[in-house]
Amino acid sequence: MSPRTLPVGYRLAQLGAAGAALGGTFDLLVPRLLPAHEAFLGVAPGGAPAATAALVLLLLHTLGAALVAVGLAALALLAAWRRTGLRPLAWAAAGIVVLAEGSNALAIARVGSPLFAGPLAFAALVAGGVALARPAPTPS
Image (cartoon, rainbow, N blue to C red; front, side, top):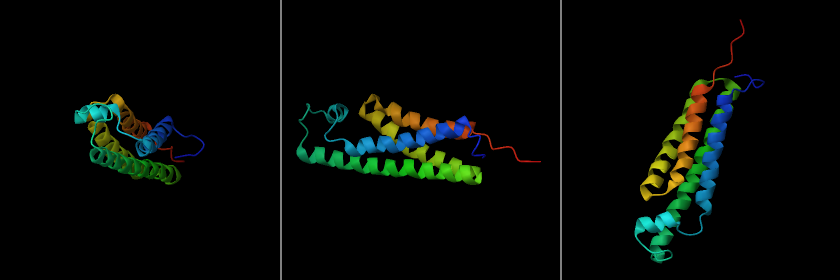
């Protein structure tokens, strides 16, 4: 892939990977249970037992760290793809983001939160961007 002519697909894939990392950062920074968590647990706002709230937040923060790593890894794979032209690197980036953010979106939807749209969009951007990107023409 020529650095001078970055295809739109490549930029979309980068945007999705960066979104995954930023979404993970959001999960890392959640200070208390969100309304969707409390509704899923069937408790009033602020009514979850302290141990339950602590466990949910611990899991959410751990998920956030993993999603930051996924987003950064995908960005590194995309950069390597740009540098080397090896398309399997791009599909590896798409695969890890689709797996991680797709699972995240399903879990968020099961909790009943509309925030599932973010991870779903990030996965679609990376996969769609990689699918749209065309290899640079080889010189004859």
